[in-house]
Image 1 (cartoon, helix red, strand yellow):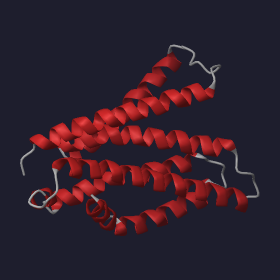
Image 2 (cartoon, helix red, strand yellow; image 1 turned 120 degrees about the vertical axis):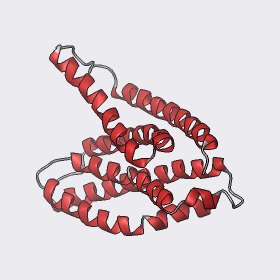
Image 3 (tube, helix red, strand yellow; image 1 turned 30 degrees about the vertical axis):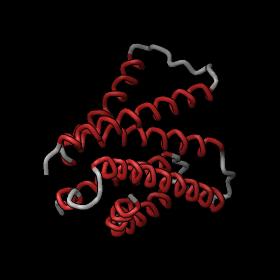
Length: 206
């Protein structure tokens, strides 16, 4: 299991360097302007790199080779979910560092708003990863990207529809209740996603 995770992280070594330059540019441009969505961008860019690891595996026909070794299909699938978690955590930590350093440089205080944004986006990125991985195993990385865009448009369209119909979104409830619901939804989705991915992968032939 450890070897599978290290393989993916080493494959991303070059991507990390490119991503670091991009994130530095984003931080320089957006933080002085007070645009906190840069923290969400950092987390999502890291989370989506799990697609890159599967693309590399497909190009190298890794799965055919891996299944000749003493590695089970369950371990292969589980390793991708662990890599997703590692990438998400890395993105969240980096977001915290960028936010802390950025606010210090700008002479501001590190607000709870930034922390809340990072926490919520972290959970949303896990949800997107949970949706994405079964799609990748079923349809491949390229088709899954298009489907993921559609998945992102659905909730966006729903919120726009509520706004057009002037249906109020409840805001008076305790924010910790919303957080608890989001955490529960994320964990349930992650467990369901893993089971679905494993079921799909066990039926695949390489």
